[in-house]
Length: 501
Image (cartoon, rainbow, N blue to C red; front, side, top):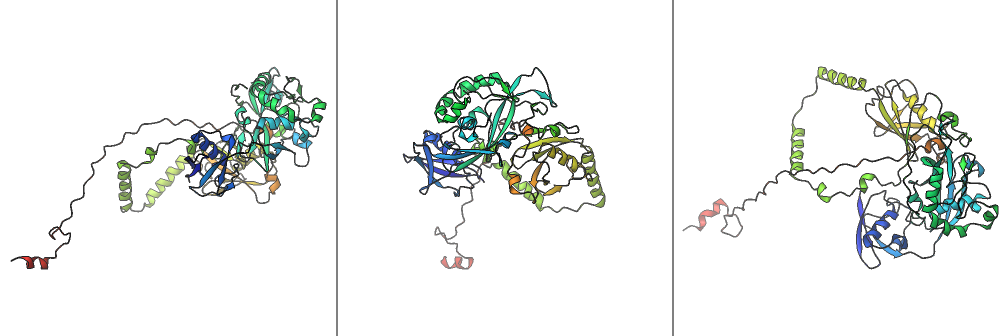
């Protein structure tokens, strides 16, 4: 439920910020600084002399509705944050047992500087990592297609429930994301784009040029002796194992890089050896994969609505009175014939459905959508889900929301007729109780499937002017009757005759 908090600036000016349970405290800080016209990177939030963890949401911060927050000046000296990156396969095999690399970095480092630091810093321990300059050839069903030109693979960072996958996101610092102390875990994957690698390298070099110059002194002497491409010099575009060598990134905003909607692209070099056989096996239907939302705040809560839209008018009152009148009327029960006709109409409605789209929402907030026909069963849905899972041997359940009905993994009941699914449906993925916690924390999707993820595009709702009905004139209450000669006291009838002469 939406509420609001009050933020008091250093000059005692006060602003009100609307929040909901999923709003991050960093968003509250940015909105308050925007209203107070001060830079958000120079301030922190305090509540009752306690500094708040800006990486938390309003629900987990312990704040109450209407809380009064104070804007305090941030220290100019950046703090140290322990940053860990969960690498995807096959890079994770280079760092057993968990496939992670960690290093202590300043809180004013941007996400791009962090990725470049892990490529060539001491955290990689001399092992070759290519994160920011990956290239992959265009493939079709595991075979090379086209001229063999390399296309850029952009990093995709997931921090808790937030996804960072654009160059604008990579310019944000740890402090801007709310991490000023402690540690943070970043889950790394890669997303294929339709931009040639050479064009992307030129744009990166200009886009992150200033950041690369600032992060160069942070690199260790050992990495410099190895000759890793960590300086701001121009990189070579020679591919290595299906990926290009690391390059120096860039300042001018490049054109947006869009995800290709091609069949499952797979590296011919064998980097995705775990999933190349299943992702293109015959019998699988086309799938559309959507990436996790960048913010836990619903899009509807971010819209700027007018307060007049929620003010009731005379039409709402008439509709409410009409509803109360209909509920108060006596209604007879349906006869047996009417019940049979109603059941037959429902059966005809289900039989008329030729196909439906089922979207499965996964634990990491990614989702996938398939199209199913009248003959498809619950086993068909389970098979499609397992085809994109990184660990398909684990047990899980698919549940319909609201009714908590579990779709069984068998061929006895069809999806449309057996489970009465007549429209597009959302299904929730739930782990079985026997699955250990460490397996649940691993990346859910295969790297080839996660690379095809695209953002959910919310269409703009057109603004329609609603003409208000004529307002009825207010009815004045009749003046109170007063028989007590102006005193406000009503004289009883048996007392009226005593005053007459």
